[in-house]
Length: 136
Image (cartoon, rainbow, N blue to C red; front, side, top):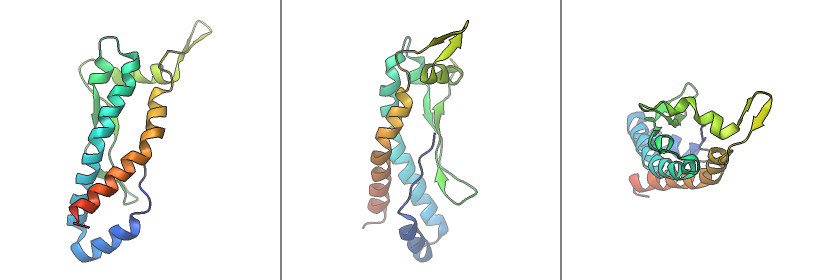
């Protein structure tokens, strides 16, 4: 699950020429982290649909932003913790088949729906954070 940021490329390239690559990477990392926290909290609320003991909700994590081979910065959202919910999330998200019978849990598609709805909010949060850091 990843979200690509488009439209800020020209602005970032111009700022990179003026300020340098290290400063821009710090600004981008901070913006992704700041926008990632509300995204993570919203995802926790979304997966609360299939919360029994709350392990799936409690183990939502967001990684540190990293530069990819294509030059874009990405942060991954996933599950990590002692209850190993990363093994079960896909079953709740997509459903499963057992003994030739298809099971669709009540929360089927919740994560995809949340990501589709929150993408524009995340992008605007990243943009606002970059503009705020650059005093624009």
